[in-house]
Length: 429
Image 1 (cartoon, helix red, strand yellow):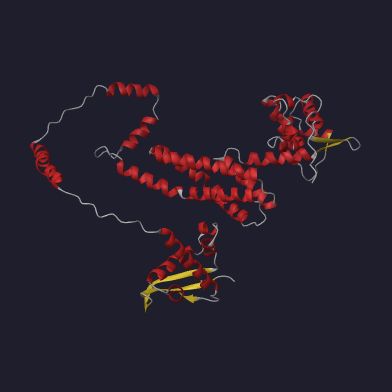
Image 2 (image 1 turned 60 degrees about the vertical axis):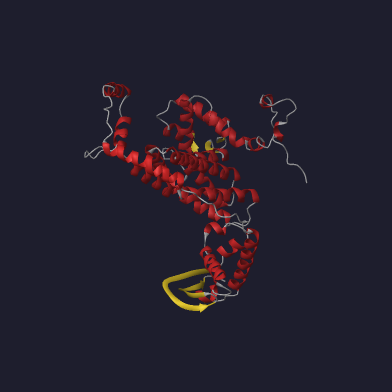
């Protein structure tokens, strides 16, 4: 096995080696090697984005306009001058010269025409995708999802892009969890709005990851990242119910101000919209008020005395006797028995060639075994169980569908008196 040639990093005028400690070979660094290998493409971005903001905008505009003409991708000098008549002639020549010298434009001296280089076309394509997401809510998640989808479509899945998608999903999940823990209604509302804005991309990402994990040619590291992304997306999709439960809990704690129809949340929302000067004025006026004392009435005094004299003494006189100690049951033997029953049940399912009655599939042995088989049927076509390994995953991906009605029928055998009417239908070979 031979080593691939290292990229040239010690070219004339290069100061890259000065950034590293003595004795470190820059080309041997795994983090730097991919950048050095793509130096030609990166030089295109350096050319476009070096300098002031105004210069960068003009270069991008000129290069994008040149690349827009797909039917005739060649430009003569006269066509460029006419098309960019709104630019100063000297400035336009400077921009074209810079793009040509840095291999973003190609000048054909024989035909005297300009055209985009390969690096220029790749750069414009990447910029087009990036600009299409500008201004959208959580454009970061949408852009990364689009990159993953593009890689999956052409069969070039990037583990680095998958890492970025997983990182963004984990950031969002942490933000949502913190909003729930904070217990702030306004923070929960903002998180709900953010979840609604990224919902479309999470659903799209779920479809893409499902297609990626179904590919048997993935390496182990990439498959693990895709599997982690699927789990993060599942947690994200469950956040709608979590948010709603938290908001409902806050609704029950909300204080309403008499018959005015206003609540404490309305007052807080109004105060958040005021300026600091207005808040100071309101606080100064509020300090004039002082609490009014309330005196204890005889009824409350009587209730307190009754507890102190009677109920507290009864609690002292009560004796609690703990039950005798006992050894905890051995769970290892139970798990082993269940695993044997699961494997037997899988063998019975594999022997079913057509549709089968629910009673014939479940009943057998005794009632605990029948109940265990009935509970196992709930795993059929379960997505989360299907991505696991072992007998549980094999059962989840079995080609069957369970149809159960509300009616029951008599069995009276093997400890089972009656069972729901249902069929186990085979859906595949």
